[in-house]
Length: 319
Image (cartoon, rainbow, N blue to C red; front, side, top):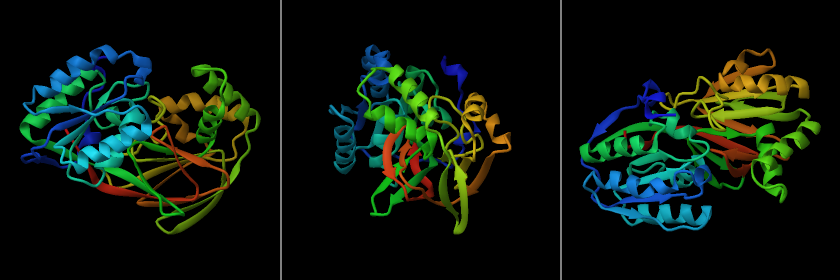
């Protein structure tokens, strides 16, 4: 895919600000293993592209996801003028925890297997083109407000996400794959799908949408701030990260055969027309079910029950 394959569009149409950005350095988080390392050789060119904005660039050091998140938080606390994440949705997710709800602008450079948040918010798919967009915004003091989703569990633990929260079959598959030690690579995920398909059963969920309760049986529940997850699957096809709302898509009492048949339609977003799929929209979503650990932006997150709120303008994007 080239930069022209996904041009900035109206989905990232939040208010544009033009004001001098804070004078601190541009902190850069990078994940050299993202996208199976295929963009690793581009790092020097990406850093040069960012430096062309005339701002000092500081590469953050981290050897694990937890260290990456801590490094981003420390950089923001130390006065970073901007934060840039080079990697996929997992790298972006770690960076968002540091900049959400702050005035520190953020730029994602898509260099992972899944780059849903960056593409859904209008950045080019080509990493070098995305770096140019971010550098231009830095030079001009330009940023654009978009929404984020903030979730809180029953213990008060808070996390932010940008794209989609999975709280059904896909989350269960991820949880099984993460527990498996064999096989390695993508085959582990494929095997986890087969195991969980064999065990597929609807679970009882309680949804409270802006205070209105819904009891339902479902095999898949997704709560989207953006339309896509999993590298381009349009699970919440009408989600808009500038409308102040969350889109909730629920696949009800679906059997194995139907799930396998409907799942490919997610790439076009046409699954929502299936009679067993329901869509909702709300500012606040309270979600509970037994035995579900959620995955946000593809990253293991909080265990249900959780409360998810759309937070308008929680992030300033360098676009």
